[in-house]
Length: 54
Image (cartoon, rainbow, N blue to C red; front, side, top):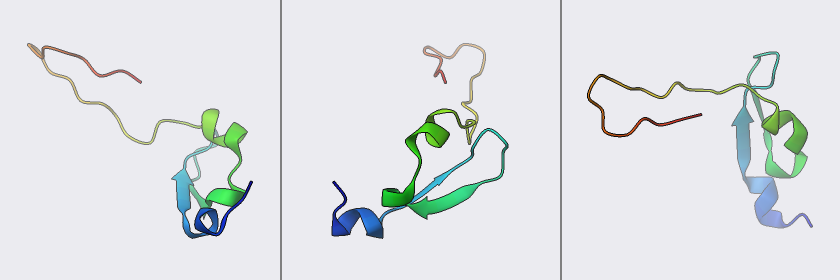
């Protein structure tokens, strides 16, 4: 169900081909988002207590 609030939300993601896309939440493809590439790296360093993952 699409509500008026969904149209106001802009989703930005990087699909598998790497070209960034910005679109309304109501128009976003869940499949393209899930299959997309990570948009930022998670930092880590020696001695870090916990390592963030993908």
